[in-house]
Amino acid sequence: MADYDRVIEMDGNNLIALFNRGLLRAQVADNNRAIKDFDKVIEIEPDNMMAYINRATLHAEIGDNVSAIQDLNVVLNEHPDFFTGYYMRAEMKRQLNDLRGAEHDYLAARNEEAKAKKQATTDAADGRKRASESKDTREETDKDIDKFNLLVVADKEASQKSQSKYQRESRGRVQDLNTKVTLEPKFVLTYYDKGFEVNRPVYFSKSMEKANRMLNLNWKLKAVNNEAPLNEMQVQTHFRSIDNFSRLLVQRPNDARLYFGRGMDFMLVQDYENALKDINKAIELQPDFLQSYFVRAVIMSKQLELDPLLPPEAVTQESPAGVSPADRLKELPKIARAKIPEVSTKSFKYDAILKDYETVLRLDPDFIFAYYNMAEIYSLEKDYRAAIDSYSKALKIEPQFAEAYFNRGLSRLSIGETAVGLDDLRKAGELGIVESYSIIKRMQ
Image (cartoon, rainbow, N blue to C red; front, top):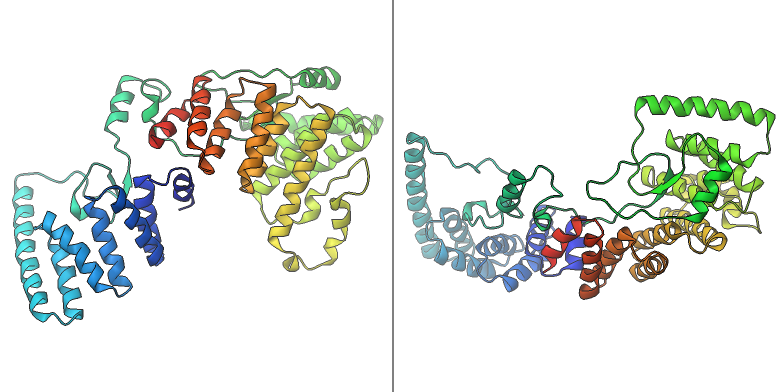
């Protein structure tokens, strides 16, 4: 349901999202709000019989049989063979003590049901079968009234024709792709990326070039937002690298580069606790190395994604200057975990992550990936205007930043700035994010 909420936030007239959210709300007995969704569907599309019958059912659920009958009247005028509607109206009339009307509808329902059964028997004898009778969804143009309680999906015919002509989804009519509306992922520092079907711009960073020269690691460090999961051989390679860094640290215990390298290995094998310890030590030994702060922020974000109830000390950071909120939170282990408010704990984690990105930008005001990742945190907090501001700062530095255009477009749509939001999505599409076009098509 959250996906439909987000689509409706951006496009209040999206029929598919409104209809499906109405169905889902009905399933959890959120009847009044479900009725509002179907009200909106009918306002936009007055001949949507599926919405009328669902709204009729909901009116009956809340005891408003008069309104329910009015909706069913509309449906049965359009579909006089819909025997389920007659049965429903008969019961409502009975509850309103209209016994004659109830009997009339009941007999009509029996008659139409008999006709339907006879037709079904004939179809079976002829070897015909409804291809969609076992489906859990219906396409938007499918107006079969018996499917009134099925979730709606966009018509697939056009996209199927495209896909029969082109092997890859990113070729042909990209605006017909079924795309889930989600932000482009955050950027991380890693050695591996998956690549894209459609080429996107490559973003140059002087500080990344400098960091690779200084670190002299076995792999080139790069900032990507499509990191590749490690295969078994790579995992074993990085475990051996951890052992190698550990041996070197015995000889050179104050070398920040070794702690950073081992911290990267720990992060890649998803041992985030040890990764944080090493990155914290690297920062202590070399507080002006911005990549350490960036990696620490990414690790804390990954911890949040894996376990939103992580204890606060697991993300404690050591600041080179002054006492941070994290230092004050060291006393929290003395308090029962159940007494720590979840919201304030999560808020602290966001603050800690943002503080690291701010430090990165103090050390290099042109490090666009920090602005971009800060915007992601603001979006998680639903502070879309702050997110837009951060994306805009990144775009001022790198005007070809495709992912920033895409995410800024979605953020602008979230606050109702549709025209400029669509402009951003068009620019993102031009720069290689083809998913933009299907979103634009849905919004128009």
